[in-house]
Image (cartoon, rainbow, N blue to C red; front, side, top):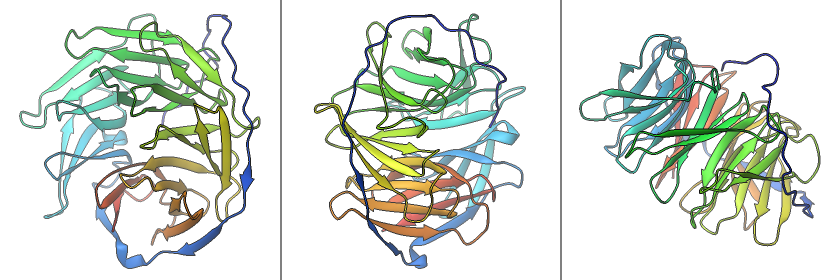
Length: 330
């Protein structure tokens, strides 16, 4: 992951602040069966950062240190790389409505589309006034527009039909990280350095800040469940938070053993919440109904799973520290 020195200049503007009540809950944990977990090696030094199960059954990942989109065939374990261009350092990858791979490409400061059939690579560069955005994560809204974040203090959108790229300075400068779309089409991002989450007005591009339940938790990634509740990984405090946009309230659960380093978060098709825990070197599955965790520890040290995505029956992660992909099947 690339880091930028200093904080970008940003416009001074009044942003509505929503003050929320919150609760912290003690909970149980059990270790899940190791047999549910499988690992797939990728080329040494790839440093896989984000992962996305592809429509054809393969799995895409960003080979951040090798400037490529990786493609894994889980049946044969064959891995291939699609180079993204000179100086590429891809961060996030998602599947678009067009079934193509869409990548936040920090090295070339562009959003990248990779055609899964032809392997053609198309770049959508950011506007010149937003250099070195340190692009992070992307999501598509319900109208087919891609929204993205940049840790240098940027968020923006790409219209795939016209190729037009818009970008805005984040209201609190550096920090925009994870991003998600709710079932009703709202787009929200989490700001790690900015210590907040924000709702983007998809028409005007304005961002409305929502403060976390307490200062300093470090919201890193964000995901919506089927009801539109927002689940957020709190990196600094080792917790997961759930924000209800209707009632404007938070509820918080601590990780089973760790007091920091909750990185990725993903809500599956059954509304189970998956998170990664760097200190415990594990992936956790949290059941919001029973308020209990199941834990899947890695079989190697320093797994550093930075992102999670799934499809029915499978949850995939990228072990950036071991050059592997991991899948939990149920």
